[in-house]
Image 1 (spheres, one colour):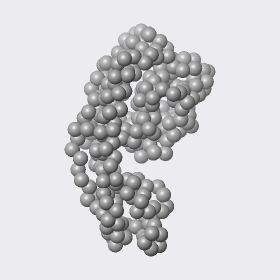
Image 2 (tube, rainbow, N blue to C red):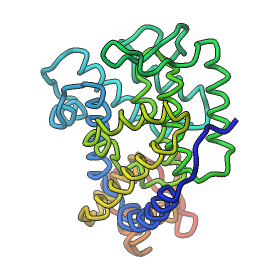
Image 3 (cartoon, rainbow, N blue to C red):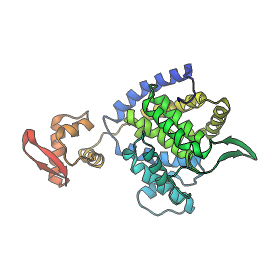
Image 4 (cartoon, rainbow, N blue to C red):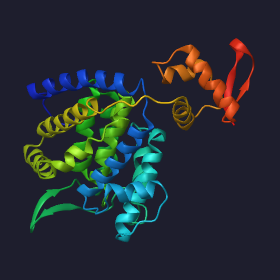
Length: 318
């Protein structure tokens, strides 16, 4: 069954606005990949998503942890960040359409924080507001069926991924498949789903917008629970994505040096061998002559090894 929601005029307007901005953002940032922007996004995303759940660490402290430096703070908060860093390092290995990937990500995210990380809950769970139950999640015995149904929707439904990613975010919050970590998993899975279709979302920390509007975020979730559909939540999330895209479009693009291009390429490619053509696919705004110079320089520096000659040339990491 398809999760209940209505495609409103606001949803149509926002998806059109987002689609236009995605094109601009991808031209600006994917044709000139910025390792610095990618790193900044990871830091902002981790800080914002965990801050929504009460984590106290700052972006400076998270930056230090990514750089393998010691930080002082609550042990639980430090472990939460350490786990989140592990998840984001494996982001490209996760499959948004597989429940096994979903469970693996939760295990990485919640290891040492709860019992049985990476396993669906086995008991009832409710969300309390003051002394009142604000949301009673579906019974534990229905979780395998509900999650299988939700992942089938994400993979097979014909609605745009922009909409489906918002729906799966909401439904993970609603179904509450784990004892804890459902909010951060919902936000993570929306990012992962969007990245499959729009690689620019690796550079887009829309969680910072959610953090800035945290009260509205939870209020909208509550309203959707009462209405029995996620339309309002889709509108809220699309608005956050639209705002985050507006910000990234305004971010100045720094031109990379030859060494920066090569370091970025080698850090992202997983193939044993690559060619000049592969290198040009990543850096679409440089000429073949510039690509050749970059490769010769990297060979001279001992970063890569060349095999073959002229048209048969291929390279591998040294």
